[in-house]
Amino acid sequence: MNYQGFVEDSAELKNYLDLLASNESSTSWSEKEQLAYWINAYNAFTIQLIVEHYPVESIKDIGSLIQIPFINSVWDIDFIQIGTKKLSLNNIEHKILRSRFNEPRIHFAIVCASISCPKLRNEAYTATSLDMQLEEQAIDFINDTDRNKTENSKIEISKIFKWFKGDFTENGNLIEFLNKYSKTKIHPDAKISHLDYNWNLNEQVDPIHTTN
Image (cartoon, rainbow, N blue to C red):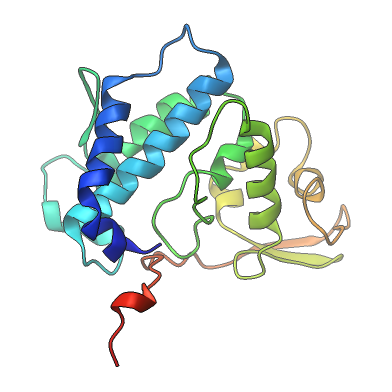
């Protein structure tokens, strides 16, 4: 992510956030419209959080900087204005995305501004393209050797699959889920371990602004 670029284009980011805030998702919308809206909201407000505290080494540092009583982490801060509600990133992820929609692929679409997170798409999620977008995200993430290392007999996978295992195993076991997307077919009895999660900022430096 080129966060410096977002800092410089913060007015455009604010316009997009205002658009989300003033057009809250409704149950009258289709399920795909609602899902795309909340994925976009999660990602956009995460970027806003980084931009407002930039530069930071990790999103996890922001919680310690703000020091709000009774707030456990940066994901619990109610800084997201949607309509008349104030929400946190955890509200969106756990009380909306995970509880309302039976869609494990959201874990490859929402991005926590960290190196071990999935890659952020360079486009918004839309109802008409949502299935294709989520499929591409799943394939990209599971086959990304920086985030998952898969062999036939053993796999070292992201801790996302540990933290949210139940989301991936509602219709089978974890290896069955991975094999839907993995280019390396994994044996049903493969040994499973988890890679350390890198919470450092997933920053990409804009070469235009790089100096020697």
